[in-house]
Length: 76
Image (cartoon, rainbow, N blue to C red; front, side, top):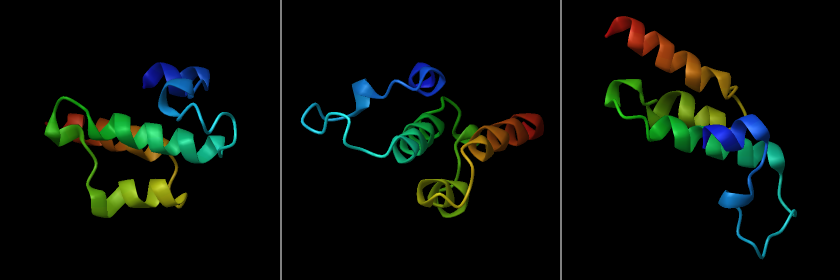
């Protein structure tokens, strides 16, 4: 997922029948949320009611997902 975000290549996550007919920003947010939700440590995963919903809706930046992980790791 990190590589898809870094390279902007979402092909592995998009239904082949959809092709290129999707919003790249929305897909990027969805991939970033999925990556944040699958972190090894539960402490580093975002809460659904906080950053995740806002990120999926476009109200929070994807960077907040990483920032949340940094904040939690500093507390741990």
